[in-house]
Image (cartoon, rainbow, N blue to C red):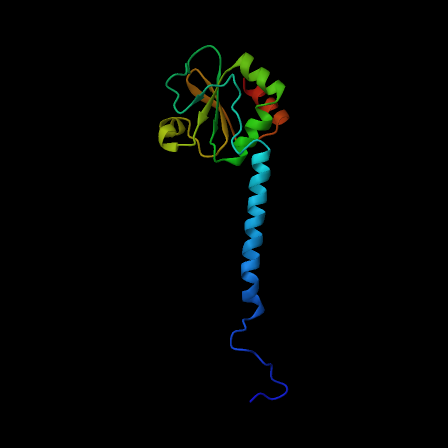
Length: 160
């Protein structure tokens, strides 16, 4: 028998914290679905590669010793900073003009690292995205990570 000061609890009652767990889980799922929906509404998760940049998984078809410097932009579909680089920096008119007029620019797709493994090793890629400038067959400059258009352009101009 319970005394007047003891709390009465029915056998099927649960602590309040365990009742909140399903609600929190449901809220997390709703937030994830909303964020995915927003991302898809903005054009999906994978940005388009600029039309002047062929997309490759190896460098065998690229003339690395020609007159123009080669600019290799290494990205992957699963890499959010890579997609931001493609949507913003590589879409910038000044960056596009410099790359298309003064370089042989290529996109190295590291999405399937098995296919791109040789090229990734050849360029010593450790971070995505990475931009590598190659002259006379050798890497001479590297920019690791995302850079805004103005910073990317200034870096490129100093390396070409």
